[in-house]
Image (cartoon, rainbow, N blue to C red; front, top):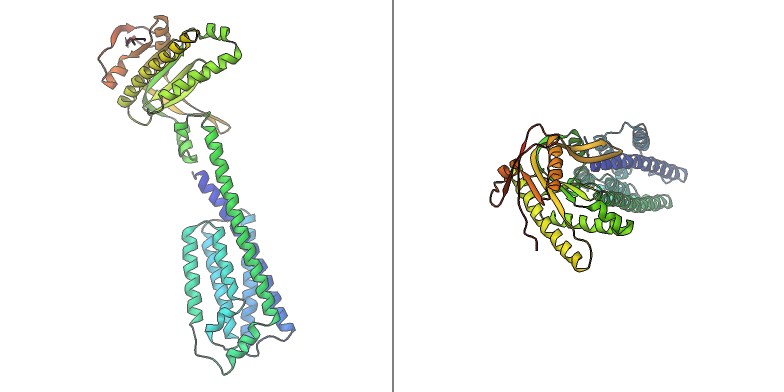
Length: 428
């Protein structure tokens, strides 16, 4: 699956090829008008042979045909990125033929080829590459164009008919050819301005998507938003079975507290509580899965291993309990109600992934381990304990000192009793 960036560049390439197609059509019309003007006022070089004029007609018709083909291909949705190589090489070939005709018609020195209006077509082709946003293509075609121009200019510097160079310069700067130059200069200027505008619009589109992604991380775990392209999102949607440490956090007596606080103060209270929880996770490799009212579900070990995840989970729990203790003491000093929380940690295999369709996705973890962690949190609350962990957490983390065993407990919904332990926090 292509990423959003690849799709964006692909769409830009297709639009660029259509635009270039229209410019080719315009160039063909300019060349036709110039040729007609030269013929109508008798400014065609006297040395122009019939086959040379036929070649000029071929160049005009070929330029027109390639332009029409590019426009139709894009409009029909049949454009493919490799086609840009074919169109680009065709442009180089047609420009080279134009330059060749510049001195071939009159038999002048090839060193004078760049003095004709046809030389400006090379500048147009160089600008074409600015629309494609493909460095390798631009570099290759530009090198080919420069080498071809150099070859043509030095093709026959001395093989000239007597007086041919003077006649060539006289016909190269007639009112008709100068008008063609002015029109081509205007075309080049217009293309340059459009190229800058187009690049600026693309930049704004990318910046807008970045802003949307940044705002989205306020509602989704920011740890998952980093470099989350379409391919990574599709992989995340498939879900996977991984061993994780699951942490549930809950505020004791919140229902009674919220009734006393009122709606406005309750919102401010929860905002401060969630800010404390977020601060305690700042330096740890974890994901705040979701805030659930006055509680939170946090997972550890998704980007590390279970041992590190369990260690980080215990570290987080101890940091949070101390931070809430300080917050509670400050509230007591201000004459407000004391805050107490409960933290439960469990570890085991869970299914982690993005659940939902493309209209609404939510990262979540499901499975027996998550349900058991929730039951441990309810058990801790019923026993008036601040921090309770399961034996798998202690076994995986290697943290054994200071823990008090609560024995094997039969929890509702658990298939078998779970060994639990608590760590009593000294409150200041």
